[in-house]
Length: 287
Image (cartoon, rainbow, N blue to C red; front, side, top):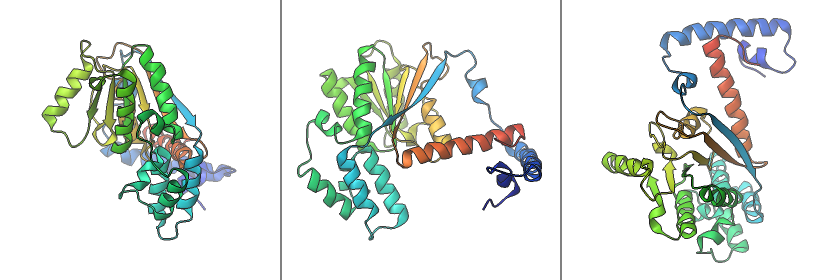
């Protein structure tokens, strides 16, 4: 059951009286929030910038990922949150479950049954993940156009796989740069400046979500996001890295999601949270 008049007013089949009370509470909450919330809207930040288009691109999970998913769900030794973390790691790449951070005994055993020996070649490794297969196809097409691309993820291991694939695709190691939280501020500034320079040979920048806030990467006009965040503000920061002052080209954002999984749930929840935030600014109950 909804736990507040505001939520009750947004529920399907809400009575007119419930909607009226919800509108009133949302307006009061907006008044309180206005006293402490100071921010520029995206419309103000985007003034004078080229157009931006965002797409959600749905990938089918692989047979290996389905087998690992079932094994992790049945892993009684792991708690609910741990299983959810492992399931999300599997959606990026099942290899991540071999790491201590995302380890699952049942999931690892299922992976070993289907893939006794993990492939070493980057292009073969990418085929074990539906989202990385899709990412590889996108990179193939985007790099053919001569555009630079930013690839964003919360998983450093997954970014490393993508980096290895691009280096093999381009035939040289200096086609890829990384912006990671472990770097010093001076190193990050040097890498960012090189990527944004039109004279450098860099083609792809691998960006950790933990470092996404405030980074200006207008050297690229294409961005691929590998995993959505429960917090829509985190995604908004990551997706906005290429659409910043100084950008001269139209921007295209590709948000990858594994079909029929928690990825879709996260994107739906993000829509609800964004709607609530907009209602606080407008003092109007979201639809």
